[in-house]
Image (tube, rainbow, N blue to C red):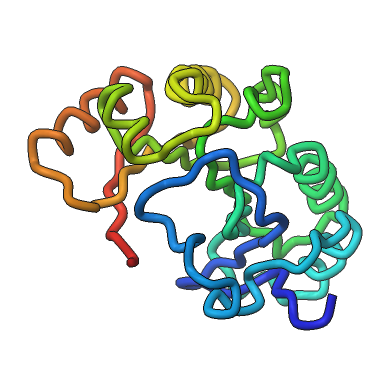
Length: 204
């Protein structure tokens, strides 16, 4: 595992990198770059849940605003391990434990063949879901999910359900060749879903 980066500091939060796996192939994602240019964040093998937990607990957590499950892959590909880590972090009784957030494409229930949103309760303080489009055609063009249009509906259902179990649910879009009308349409959709809307700058 030498050289693989499991945790990293990003804008004052501790990010958790657990997998390269993802069921989408977004046109703006940097995953398509050569693995060598992605550095240690491109995992040669997935770390065990025990190794992830140990690395988090070894940190001085007072310096971080949040713990964020986010890497080059989709964290809910390892949903059960993610939930196990959250449970152990909370059971550790650390006074310096910051809020815990999941960054996701919203396909966790589709990937795991069950509705995982009730399992977010008490584990996560916030969830950020990649919305990226206001309609299925544009969503498919941008994110290219392996499940096709099922991915669009799964993402919407995930957000609708997550707001029942998580205190703060956000949906986001990458400002990648987006016109103001599409941004506004996404904002309205976010409101209809009961989520907070935010625009993320394109990092390409």
